[in-house]
Length: 166
Ligand SMILES: [Zn+2]
Image 1 (cartoon, protein in one colour):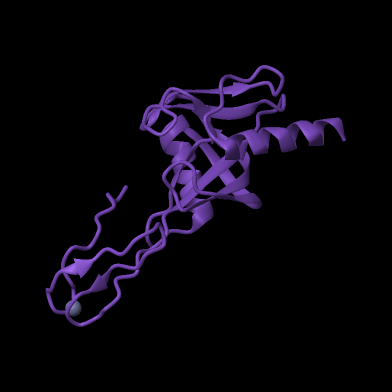
Image 2: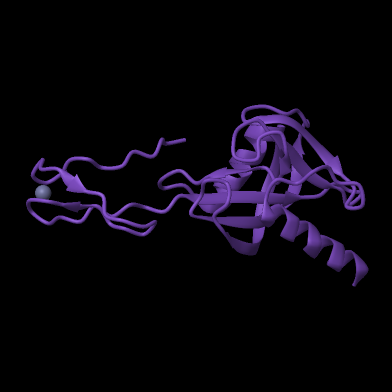
């Protein structure tokens, strides 16, 4: 995962860069006026259910929401397919192999990402074992969930419960 580093000196002329104000400010060179656009950080996660309909969640080992539960998720690397990124994160955090399909929804940032895409994902194989950024990983029945850390995961749960009643 790349660490965010604000540009302090112009990549064109080396002069100091003015940061500007507000979350959408574009840092601008004080000498040549070159604007240093920042790329959004894209978060992706997977909605994985087992044969009993239980939902795969991971207990987060890193802030924000450390110690709380959420969809297995992470950042898309440059040049990486978002579905493959989500599947990679599931494998890294839970040991499970999934194939990502339709987008459930696109959410505003909350876990450090600029925005977050949740994908439906089919369980293909692997052996469940928490690793990487996850303290724990488990399947939960929708009526017996642990404490959820993110609004996006809560929304996914609400949708699954609504589907179950439909
Ligand atoms: Zn410059």
